[in-house]
Amino acid sequence: MKVVRLNSNHDYLIDPIDRAVCAVGFFDGIHKGHQQVIEQAKQIAKQTNAKLAVMTFSPHPSAVLNKGKHAVSYLTPLLEKQAILQKLGVDIVYVVKFDLELAQLSPEAFINHFIVDLNIFHLICGFDFTYGHMGKGNVTTLFDHANHRFDVTVIEKYSEDDQKVSSTRIRKLLAEGAVDQAETLLTRPLKTIGKVVHGHKRGRSIGFPTANMLVDLKQALPKTGVYYVVVEIDDQLVHGMANLGYNPTFDHEVVETTVKLEVHLLDFNKDLYGQEVALYWKRYLRPETKFDSIDSLIEQIKQDEAEIRQFF
Image (cartoon, rainbow, N blue to C red; front, side, top):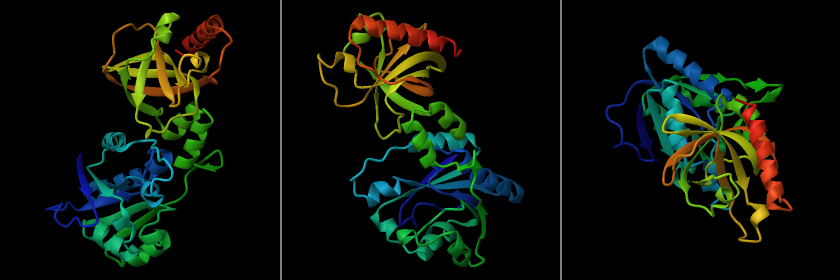
């Protein structure tokens, strides 16, 4: 799969240009709704013997337009998005840099520069796709702007349980801790990548050693609490329990101001310090709790482990 980075002046970036069918959108999460768009593009590319392209944007438009006032996190950071697209059989990924210059492009200029000039002869998008300055371009204007230079296919809203499948809906599920429901809509568990670092060794002192994961908070996380997780270590999948939160039982020692991710791996005792691992969120167990004593905490952790072992 070829990854091509573009900006508002990309004339020098691509030569020659592959004739392509292209699915366009931000595609955060590449959930079931997004997959409908990409699959339609894939079928058309196969029928026309053309390259299958996906056009996405980085960073998220809101990260630029809100001028950093609100933190933006991603269900699928760019590298993870590219890996998923490769598995879906995409030939070319166009990553368009979203900046203030791009945001000022008129809808017509966007189409001419990023669709026509890239030799895209069939564009596939979702029903709510917008483009150009202030999002003034939409699926209604798109046919006019195409002006018979390329074909357009619009994919209608995809719903499950009478609700639109969307990145917003998935984020809401994560905020509720419903990682299993999010997995259903994503078609894969939410993935968090982090480096194992040294912590306070509290877990080890009470008989439950943990891997402390340093994670980029631009990755979307579920609400704080205790979870059943699966961790990928050197192509091995290891079951575990994760605590995402602030360690309230130990806050008399040091007050945590940043959310921490600690994982107790079951039936695993190898040294992971300095290693990058992937964690998959499987099921929410309970909220993070401040216990009256360490003994009470230990008893609860034992119950958590017993519950998790019933899942596999």
